[in-house]
Length: 228
Image (cartoon, rainbow, N blue to C red; front, side, top):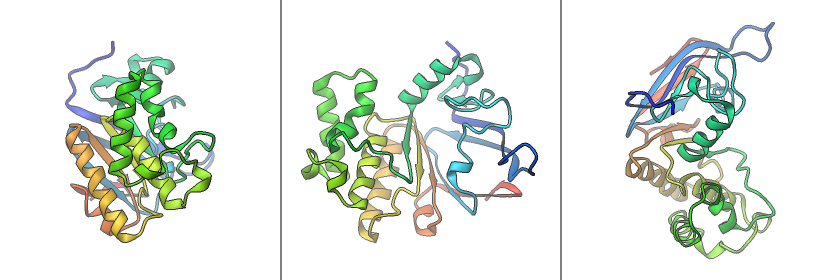
């Protein structure tokens, strides 16, 4: 349902942001197409939470992306909110700057959650979770809880959770902000590797030029719009 012949992983049209209807737009008329294998870094004054694709200029859709956009070849204007939510759950991985890990779940339970929601069988869920915890360097912490961990370790949980279901689109907001330089370099390499391995695409939002340089291209979002 809703499938279209579209090679883009993500297509955004006429994206705008304003804090209230009576205030000038921070930016407007932004278009973006992200194709398979592309890894894009967004760099600039405007934070990623202000450019989240849910905030389309046309009839916002709280459950997901703007209705005139497409995600993984699906025209979202053909879907209701429940269908958009299910598509987002399957196709998108989020690394939030504030982490948003669940404090009442252990490390491995937090990471396994996307797989559980997708109905992945327990054996496969356990295998993928273990592999991803090892990939981000926190396998020995699997049975601990977030309150027992450092900020950097919690950030690794968030990254592992975003990658474990092999999303077609990865959206990462300052994913290395709490990590030392060596750990940050390893995580940035992992993000790029996973995007390419899953034949997907990714958007990295960062104020770090070092982090941005790991992407295929860098775009700046400011009041003038989106530009190299």
